Image: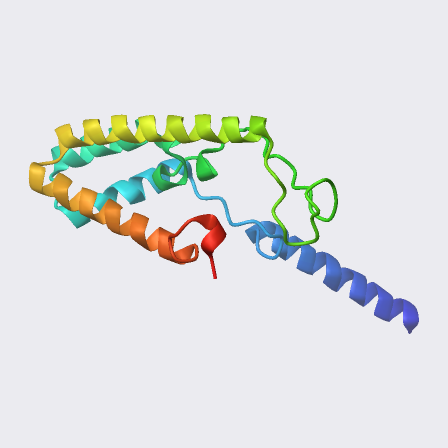
Length: 170
């Protein structure tokens, strides 16, 4: 009887593991979305939101595809603009920063320089994208787009803890 129960438990465990592996649920990963489909969906959303015509839609899809890798998650590219670069391992719970769990480790000068370089690259890429976008959209459409971008920036700051400097969160 014990062997029968153990065999049953083993089969159920393997079945559950297989089911989770098939749909990427339960393993901490989101299901993969096709990059091309994501770009098309985001372009379609902008077409509807700003009332773009078919010619504008085709040009916008080309533009979004062109900037997908440099603009990060927003354009359906890689997350957060990290292009295969390794993220520094946090030093929680020890080291020179007096860190216990939950404290952010001190950044090295090299890390700061790398982050500043990435920020400048993102800003330059955004500037080029916006310049090209202005040639696709009408002035009214572009104005609405910029207003939405500003609103998203304000909302993002509020979600992070009030939008103030990092050290002033409550």
